[in-house]
Image 1 (cartoon, rainbow, N blue to C red):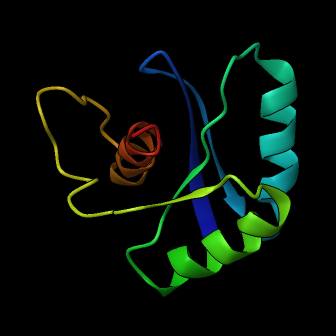
Image 2: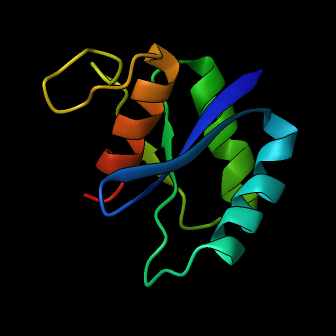
Length: 99
């Protein structure tokens, strides 16, 4: 299963990546090391079986990972102008993980 990851800081999309599930812990660790931060939020959309599997896997590496409701995350809105629907969903999931 491939996952789309969005790195968001202060509401801005810094980078994104599409990876195999097994590659994600290393990528997330490198992102955390690369960007200065005060807080880290890791949100995983759990709207389907693949998302739940990803959440259970990532929770082993990042105990503070959070389940995020995926409902309507890939809808176009005036506030999110990302064309790729998977990336748009990843961005919205990242934003929702902070609440």
